[in-house]
Every structure is written in structure tokens, then in C-alpha cells.
Image 1 (cartoon, rainbow, N blue to C red):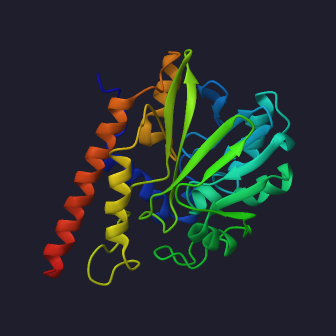
Image 2 (image 1 turned 90 degrees about the vertical axis):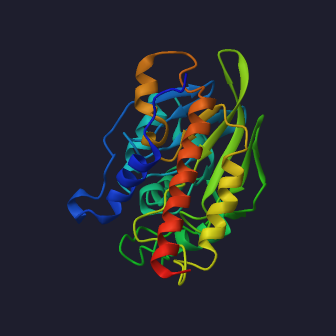
Length: 286
């Protein structure tokens, strides 16, 4: 049975909503939540919707994503709740450089001393503090972070016995990065995927004068990966993408093992992308 998760259209609309809210209501999905395990030595340490993941190795910790600027304190608190010193974080990775996933990284880097490794394109955006985004422009700036290194497509990031593989899945941002790595759940090794984002925000131009040159081709390439890559433990940059809070509440040891849900999510997502592309093509006669 396909486990219940948010539909791709609903997730896209909800996720996009944050970008168009008044300043006082921008931080959607930023309510504090206690950390919870998604696999052995892998925890959700983010907020109620914006994700952050902590991965334990015998050489230290890896942190993926930093949420909003105000999420950083929540993430640090959740790391401590798990019994770790934030200074044990050695590497900080990123799904993508929008303000709801990267604005907290400056504080997290300062307080952990970790190296920040991101894709080259999103690294440029992060170094500008979110300014000059191809769609958002300068509307949602944050404290700039200069990455310590760039991640290439297919590059492996290793710390102790942990190995994560970066997959550049551009479209939502130029350097959107999906991460895959093996995990153990209930004594069995599974393949985990952390989706950066596959949503096409309202206002993205896929034809004619594209939001950035090649954006539609990038989405096509990204979907070729997402629809075929091993995905047994489905995770993402927003809880709503994979029903994280509902799964956490179930109390099941294998609650996050959901290959059917992963496949269904990307099939629905691809259909939605193709429909939007066709709509824009019809509107422009291209």
C-alpha cells in the first residue's frame, strides 16, 4: 500500500506560499518540534516543515540544511537534545540555497566550526546571501555564507563510515542537490534519498524567455534521475513532501521506508511539470 503523503500539487502550492506571504508570515512551517529518528543514526532535527537532518558517523556529525535564520537555534537545540555537542558537526551540506533552507547556515557554521559544502551554482547564491536569485531577486536576503568547497554531480562526501552521494537536480534552483546514501532500518540496509525540491513555483517561466536558460531541460534531466534512482527511505527538504510528521507519529520502526510513496510522488510530480510546460507552450504558441 502506498503510504499517505502530501500530493505534489498541494506540496508545491504550500511550499510556494511562503515566498509570497507578507514579511510577518514568511516563516511557514517553522514551529519547533523534537528530533526524531528516520533511520539508525539519522535524525530529523529541523522544524515542523523545513527540514534539517543530522547523520552520525564514527568521525563526527553531518548536518544537511539550516532552515530559516531563526531555525538555526532550534536545530542546535535539537542536536543537544540528542546528546551531541554541536561542535561535533564536521560537515554542513545543503539541499538548495533558498532562504528557508540556507538562511540558518551562517549561524550553524559559526557555532559548529563545520565545513560548508554545496553545489557551485547554489554556492554562488549563498555567498550573495540569497540576493540575485533568478526568480526571487533580492526579496529574501540572509546572512551570506562563503562555502568551503563545491560539490559536483555524482561526488561522494565521506565522513567516517558514512558516504553520501550528491546528485545535481536543477530546476527549482540552479544547483538544487538531491542526496542519496545507504541507511539501516530495523536491521536492514536501505537506500535513502533526500529530495531538494521538484516544485515549479508559480511564475517560473519554462518556455520562451525562461526564468533561466535551460530550466525546462534541467527539470527533465532531474526527473530522469528522480524517477529511476533507488529510493526506499524517502525524505525531503520539507516535511510535507513525504508526510514526515504523520510517519513520525506512527511509532513504527520502519515508518520512513516508503518506496511506493516515493515513486508515486515523482510520477505525480512529473505529470504536473509536463502539464505546466504544455500550458505555457500553448499560451506562447511555442
